[in-house]
Length: 340
Image (cartoon, rainbow, N blue to C red; front, side, top):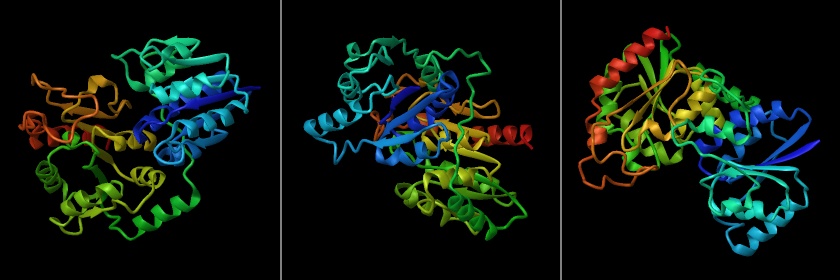
């Protein structure tokens, strides 16, 4: 039996984007045990995958922050005798762990830090989607259709019941649209006043549910306070998996270039992603056939960074303001028409 370890200690969105890879890895090695090294905030996601045997938490900000703690963590992993290791995460810390495992079959990207520790280096194709790049890492052959894999997650029954109860208290005569207005990067956030204009157009026909973590509660509550009961803030009330369950009951999700985009892929619903300071070309756009994205790219300053920034470097934020609500509403209407 193959004992396989996957190392992914990046953000929530990155965790969701390796789920298709894990599913196909399970197909390639049917008699295998797949473990994942993850950070505390993404352990919930990997624990819900039916293809993962165990989630091993690396608390790199606290318990495993020091050099010696990382050494001890690596030694514990080494004792498990993995036959294959794949590291979609390209950080020095991930490579350091791989170096200490004494595993012969190790796979990393050509852009990884400390890349010489990997026996097999896979070309990181910047023009591809992140899902495609992760499939390249395991050698899975795909075409234009077969790489668009919906992640398979098993939502705990208690979470399903919580969401069901939540919707039972809402007006069931109208359909729901979800909006995720937050991001940890300010230059990824579509302007609040623009979101409010879009919501104003949609209310009456739909009930709007604003989703986000506890950190997005303030922005979601602020938007909801300007409308009546047709706009509801669910931010901070549900876990990651419960948020995906909520999305399954909505007609479409409108999101910034942030983790909720990938929640929508797991939920199997149409997603419209709005790119402000970043671009779809980085490979993190919603990839299902019924999804789409918008980006105002006629700017010499865009993109200003792969992750975005806390403030616009030239103080204009044209990447957000020039993507008008009229343009977004037109695309929403088009998508709603195509997915009745």
